[in-house]
Image (cartoon, rainbow, N blue to C red; front, side, top):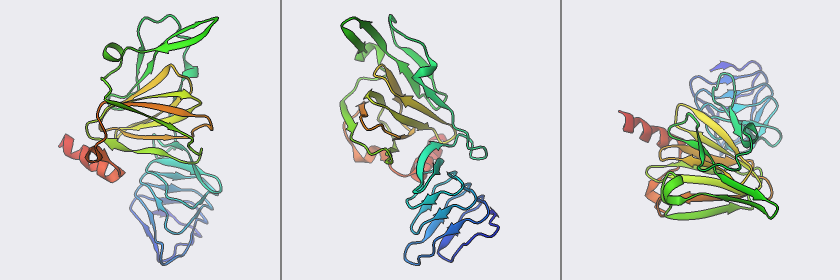
Amino acid sequence: MTGAEDCIIPANVTIEAGVRLGPRVVFVEDVTRPILVRGSAIIEAAAVIGGGVEIGQGALVRAGAVVLRSVPPNAIVEGNPAQVVGYCSDPESGSRPTITNKDHSDFTGMTAPAVIDLGVGDGAMYLMRRVVDARGGLTVGEVAKELPFAPARYFLVFDVPSSELRGEHAHRQCHQFLICVHGSCRVLLDDGDRRCEVTLDRPDLGVYMPPMIWGTQYRYSRDAVLLVFASHGYDAADYLRTYDDFTSARHKAHS
C-alpha cells in the first residue's frame, strides 16, 4: 500500500498489495461489516468507504466519493453516493476507451453487416444493415448468414434503474449478441487483460460477446430495452459469477 497520509483506517479494514490511497481517505469502522480493498485499487483523496464494502481489483474511487456499496473490479466510481461511471483500461491512468455509433457514418444501403474488431478476445461490434425511407426505418440481420452464431434463446432487459449494473459474469461456452432496441446502455467487454466499452444507442448496432469474456452492462437510460441472443439454453453451470473465478478459469485454459 502506498499513500495513506492522514487516512482513517480502523482494524476492520483489509488492504491488499499494490493499493494506492490518497490523503484523508476515511474507512468507516464497523466490526460486524469488514471492508476489503483488493489489489491495485486506487482510492483518491477524501473518499469515504462504508462498512461491508469491497473495492474490487484495479478499481478507481474518485476524490470525495462516498462509497456505500461494493465496487466491481476495474470500475471507476464517483459521487455521493458513488456510482459506476466507467471502467479502467489502465488502472494507472484511469483511461477508458469508449466506442459509440456516433463515431461512424450512416450505413444505409449496406449489403452485409460491417464488423469492427474491439481488440478484446474475439469481441466485435456489428453495424447491421439498415433501410430508411418515407415510411420509417428497418434494420435486419440474417441469423444463419450474418450473425456469429445461431441463437438458441433470447431475453430482454428493461426497466433497469440507471445506478444498477447488469451482467457482471462470464460464460464458459455460451455466445451472446446484444442490441439495445430502444434507449441506450453501455457494454463492457473484459478478457482479463484488455477492456473496451461500447455505447449501444441505436437498433442497428450490436455487440458480439464470445465465451470467456467478462461482460457488464450499465448506465441504462430510463427507456432502454436490451435484446440479447444466446447460443445456448440457460445453464447455471456455464456461468462464472465472480471475477476471481473468471480469471482463474482463464488462467487454467491458457496454462
